[in-house]
Image (tube, rainbow, N blue to C red; front, side):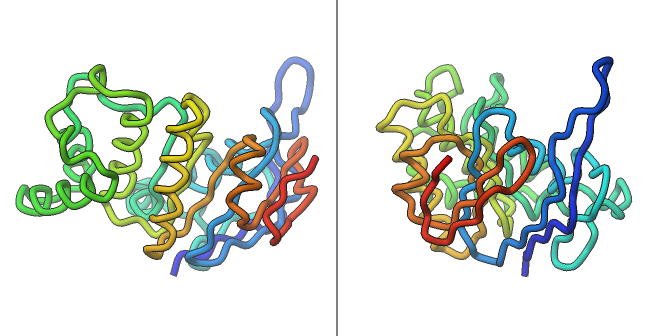
Length: 231
């Protein structure tokens, strides 16, 4: 369940200066329950890769399969179901400022039509997983950066996705909070969820020791099972 395949995928943008190549002929497979680091400097194509995977944007060439289904042939009413199977975590947290921790996480379930009793059962469980039971009633402005990111991870997990996509999730965090978040992602992966971590943080990647796919100017220049990030 949840295999990801990029087959000859390219993404082009056009502006007044001509064609900009964001991704160029990507061929890649991510196995279920795998943890991979998607490495590369800013502008290498990491965010574009993730946007294509959740069908936020369409490829210019090639196709992207999730469980052997072309995600870009899905109808608009099918996309929410795809995205519930892929939890997304961002660098800037994207929490709702007028909702407390519990409500931010519950909202992700409400959008999917969950019943009140399901929300009351699941939200405390995921809060315990991310270590925020004591912050249930806090609002985002009352939280540290690391705590905000853990709320964002809890929100991404609440619909029990098969895949977690993390786009520079430690980019705004200090060293201590960075490793708290990385350890949490490792724990989530060990519980059976595929994790795709997009980051340019060499120390994080090399200490993880997991598969590293390195992008440079939209191309995969290295796919290293030994877990080393070398440019």
